[in-house]
Length: 174
Image (cartoon, rainbow, N blue to C red; front, side, top):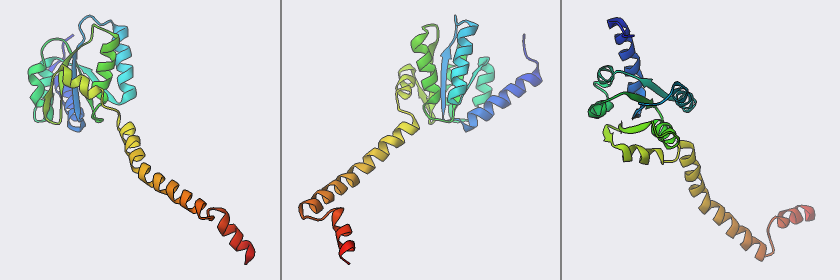
């Protein structure tokens, strides 16, 4: 069933709003996927905060016009599903992970930061750890020198006969 002009304008407006706040676009061909597979993909996308939509390519071109995803218009060929995400890696990760388990979903490309991503670029972006993991790794790196210094100072205090027992002994003597 085709959309009338007003419905097309509403779809373009909705997708444009998502594209305006997104960092990443991942595009995949879904030819041959069953409805159950698409439902599973959409469920995963919702859980990860990815806006996933099947669009006519002309509507997709109109929706991304004037955004940083305009550079990927050459990839908008064939029956495609478009994934937009505010998280830099979420859209690529959802589509790449689903493509690993289902060979009918074929990654076509995408865009990130105003640059076109090919298939390998989308897969590389999908392999980047999430923001939370990267922050945890950074925190671990920042804690390493401080905890090392604390251990060294504790050993020096222990060798000199001080340490945790010394303040308690002084307080009892006073």
